[in-house]
Image (cartoon, rainbow, N blue to C red; front, side, top):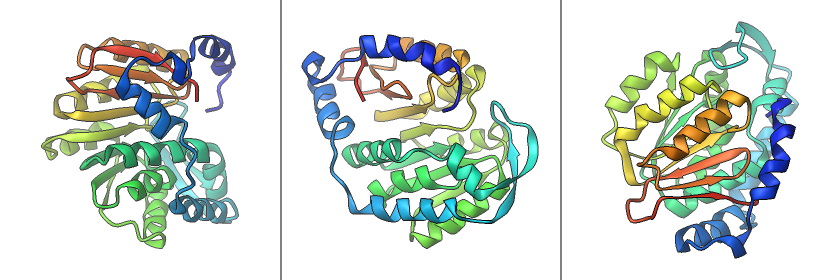
Length: 259
């Protein structure tokens, strides 16, 4: 996230954010301690970060098609620059790993593969789950596919193309979904559209993870609308990431937590 909108909101987040002592929900208390604040160093982390380091030293230049916010059509970009500017940071990647490891979803979808680093963090936490990762750019998707082979990441299905064209087919062919990571188009209207597209097939144990919820004023507005959705039972604000749980056994609550 590199946007001047962020510093304006950070102090407001810090003022509201609570630690474990301010959590009165047993479910969220367990989530906080086992996922958000857990520091266990899983062995998969080292292999993924070694891959990241290799990509950071790559001299390869690829053609990138960008459909998202801030995109400018088709351009040639260095792989190392894509990793530096667009790939998920290690701290957030490890959080996604712990979240997937904690929930053990069966059907997972990621919107925004990029070079596959976030995909690998999520897949390695539950390698037998069915995972679909969606990417608009054929060039970046091809590099991601090579990275999946390097780390022997099975059960990952890549879907390439403009989300407006590929998403309806993905949703239609899924009986239900247990986990969705939204990181492909940082526009308010697009984000809300994706949310409502997946909502009818969200299982009772499903979690939606939204990246860069403070990337812009539009993204923050989208997040505020999402947390008001009646079906979103428990929502968690981690400043950069937003979590939405649909467990019908939970009372509707919103948490702003330290991360």
